[in-house]
Length: 341
Image (cartoon, helix red, strand yellow):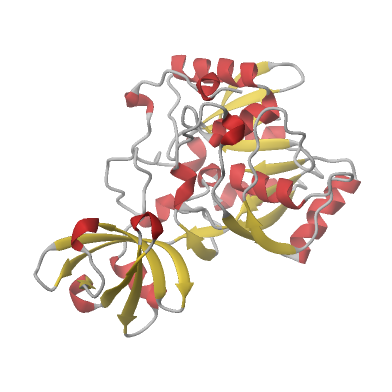
């Protein structure tokens, strides 16, 4: 399949720059794969489409406030973005301006709350950096770090927790699993009271999630790797659902990728595991575990648009996206939602 098969026209004004005031009052487009229909709802209506015995699987990763603004010893301003914890206080970082941050350069952040030294220039231009501080690193990040918002969001985020799901638990992501941003604690409580199971996976979303596909033949694209794990209690909920003939519904493409990585080809059942996934799902893929997907609207020519096209069918998805543009849905991370059932 060609990359251009997954392109669509999107007016820039439809790219959501700020989160909606109430999480669960974003719009919801409902796609019924069997009937090939398109409905327009509000997100909190999702409960109407969930049945007792179903299992929602959500990603409980937590986004690190990983964007840091600091100063060199000369007073020059610099920006660091934490990418990957190598070991202890040594991290791989994207740095700007890269040509000014050589090995041995020292930087301070937050009036000296945090210090860093560049240890090595890594392949691709990132830097191996060692941090020094007093106290707890994550608490310092909470104080002085900013959320690493996607490149298409140009407005400043007023509250860091709006780029965090209400159930975020384990630090490690460079981007939010955005389908989960629509849920409130009250909505989740009502869903459980209706008899729907809620299971968790953890996949730490990497900055590579924003990396564009650069090959015209999409089958030649190499996916970035992301770390995941799933606990036994969550495995049990998912497998009970599968065995009872009920639906496993992934909250977001990250949860979907974990489930499809670990599921048995024969049974669709999953097992407790930890690892790294580079799974690339595009049309022609046979789903093993999930029966439905709650997701946002994705960038043109992105691997995530290819994933939803694999689940619902490319023509049906492209029709839905055209309708979303016509009806002025809000797109991408802070945008509206879609339920593919």
